[in-house]
Length: 89
Image (cartoon, rainbow, N blue to C red):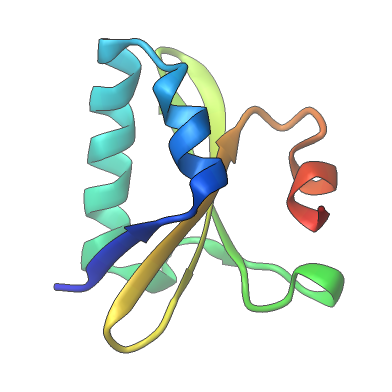
C-alpha cells in the first residue's frame, strides 16, 4: 500500500465537500491506492500527472495525482470545467 500525501491545494478543495461527497472521494482514493495506474496519464505540460474520473453524487469528478514506488500524491479534485487550466497553475 502506498503512503497517501495531499498537497495544500487538495486539502483546501476537500474542506468544501459534504460528508457524502467525501465518502465517494475516499472510495476513489482507495481504488487508486490499490492500482495507481488506473488513471489516464497526461502529456505535455502535465506529464507525470494521472487523472482518475469517478462519479461523486452522480456528477463526473476528476482527481489528479502523481505516484512513485512508495508515495501517492493527491494534487487536485474538481469538475471538468477549468480543471486542467487550474492544474497547470
